[in-house]
Image (tube, rainbow, N blue to C red; front, side, top):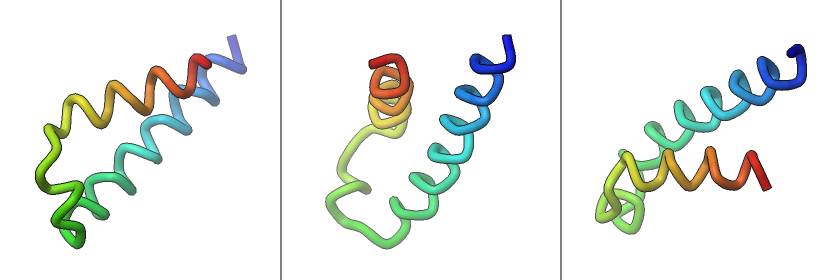
Length: 46
């Protein structure tokens, strides 16, 4: 579906932003990347 593709694109873009933010934030650096990415996917489904 088109909505699912847009949703995946949005989560993908957010994951890229998250990667960049981890470089600047000690708080985000301390968290596991896979956990943060799973959280993005969970929030997208909510």
